[in-house]
Length: 80
Image (cartoon, rainbow, N blue to C red; front, top):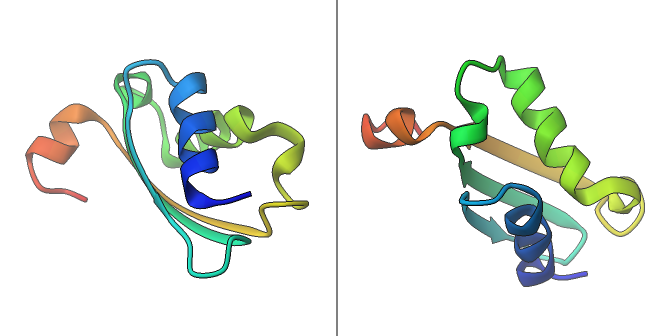
């Protein structure tokens, strides 16, 4: 599993999201996700949406995932 594959899975699960994923070792990942689906959701709910796109890969191929989950308005305001 590499960063590009993780990015595609998140993009597929959160239609219309802007996603950037990086990884130094293909097991620990950092993701910045800007998605309208996050609007009105608390941070834990946003993270749960992201985890849902990755399913069983979490804890297996993906050992750690740092998430910045922003709405489009938060991203435009520079909150990320």
